[in-house]
Length: 63
Image (tube, rainbow, N blue to C red; front, side):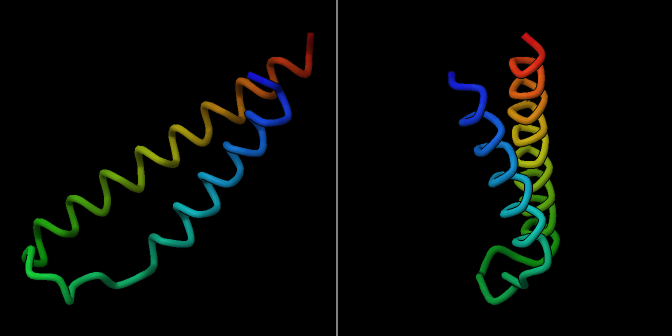
């Protein structure tokens, strides 16, 4: 993958995940506790995926 594209995707994923972290989705009928676990897991997965893309992009820049 292109090194600049990796950096861009990583930054977008991290920024979107952090921005979405603060939204309140408790209006859904999943139950508050189950929804909090789901939101937390998805957010951390997207943040880690974004950081992975950022690190891959930085690694490609060194070459």
